[in-house]
Amino acid sequence: MMSDYNVETINDGLNEFNVEFHGPKESLYEGGVWKIRVELPDAYPYKSPSIGFVNKIFHPNVDELSGSVCLDVINQSWSPMFDLLNVFEVFLPQLLIYPNASDPLNGDAASLMMKDKEQYDQKVKEYCERYAKKEHIMNSTGDEESDEEDLSDEESESSDEEDEIAGHADP
Image (cartoon, rainbow, N blue to C red; front, side, top):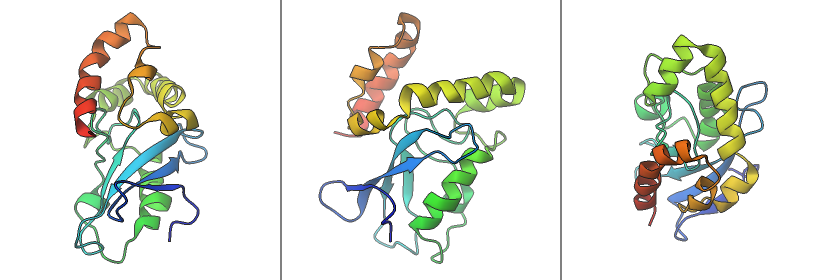
């Protein structure tokens, strides 16, 4: 099913796992590597999976703190005809290539995208460099503090709350 992807089970179960996801080619996210947490409900494939980014990404339709994804096809119009390959080969790449700033989970990203596309592009690339490399997903077990120490004083002040919240999400 997902043989072309690195998949890591959580708690030795089949309903929760992480998938290594690479940013789509010829996009701002190209070269980025993310760990995507997947939770399959008992009623899967009749009910949609829960999908979230574990390491940070700057995108209007991804909540920066929780990693939750705002994607209609997953959240509202899911069909049992879809499977996880659709999620990783079509839905997520399309989301990253064509962000929807009019329906944001990250208001800062949406606002910047609409007001200053050049600065938005720069911030996306900065996040890819800082948070979306292979070594980041290998170390992202919910304890991101070592990566955060590299930030400047100004950035670390604003991220203290994020670390605290993120630390409670994955015991």
